[in-house]
Image (cartoon, rainbow, N blue to C red):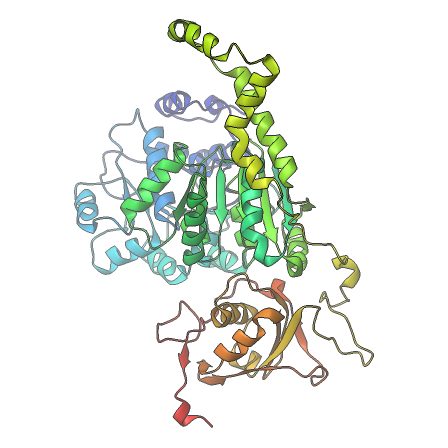
Length: 592
């Protein structure tokens, strides 16, 4: 393996990275740094988060910057505020012995006036988020005409978050002669389009398989009934006493609810989502990085850019909408050469989505049972005993108190003393888990055995038509593919109409002019009642219990068919949805 001192780096840069504790370059650094130093060129780097990408582009960037020319010479664009600040901080650390080089982070949620002032003083490297930088360009507050190196970090994330237009506008303001360095964990067609349109004969460097998960992450899933998801989460956390990780939720509301419940139940947790101010986000992240809190409860958007190397677990409270999001979630653990575990808590109708993710990341999931109360109690007890065995004893400090302690406890035998101690520390677990039920959902079928050639699961009646699954009611919706409906729209609508994010959803089938969806029969009345009075992209929306056998040929999708398209939000009020079509209350007087 090539060492840092063999790559041609400036001795002052080497001194900085040595003080940071870097001993050997990571695979992406070993390939990227000497290549770019030898001849600056356009490069596409395909690598997971946590593989050392910042040093890969940051170290050679520092070497080619001209400190005498105090104008932006390098621009780094990243999707989130956290990642933007982190990149600026890391490159500043690498440049510790290059005092003449100035680096400024530009991101939303902070005082734009202070950022403009920093730019006016002269800066060599800008680390920015797309939205704030585009805003500064429109206001003529930043000059990118002399940028010679442009870095797009976590480019796939930026596009997933809707920054395509911002990125295009920024790239148009940079010189044609610049070197563009694009880093992405996956290579969707949109990223390939950027490489084609804005890069010149780029060299591709790939660490691992394209779109694959980190090699040292173990993928596990627990299958429970939807109503038991929160109880399963607590058991997962209790089974690993020293757990340190992120719980991913689907919505901001769910993030708040789960974090509040965990805190109320005595767990060390904090919520991170887009409604927090920058100061609140900074506070939560600093608390998490310093292990002042064990578990971060976050949405996908809020957690992007988080760089913490010691996470033991990622827990998917809900599966993400697409494989790319799962890749990024699981990539938050198993970083810097360490191992990690990604756990997904699913209900019985989500096994097909697990198979889809397996295929996408090229790794198998291991199904494990949710730990029982007895197993958790035993694990916690052994953890307590291990701490007891390894505790540091300060003889000098405790010596004056020991005679009184010995006198107080002399009536207890060794066995009784152990029992008293264990009970004192352990009673809450014994009381809580004493008679708790098994949460594992029965494996009533093998998903592979039930899947047909088209990949959909479902039983067929004698006339060849599929019937609703057991415990589910099938509804017919009067909008379909011709109105632009996608599975994600239907999922969102069911959640809004039933008022529950834990409602079980079965098969979703899309046709040209209508759609079919199976939902938990216990929620059927609420769904039927609340689904009236809306429209989707100008079409009146109605739902009715479907009469099996009324539909012929179809284009079927289960929930795994959603590839992350941005669907419209169904709304019983008048707020504007995030992306997609609008859902508004229908004027019943105009019903026809």
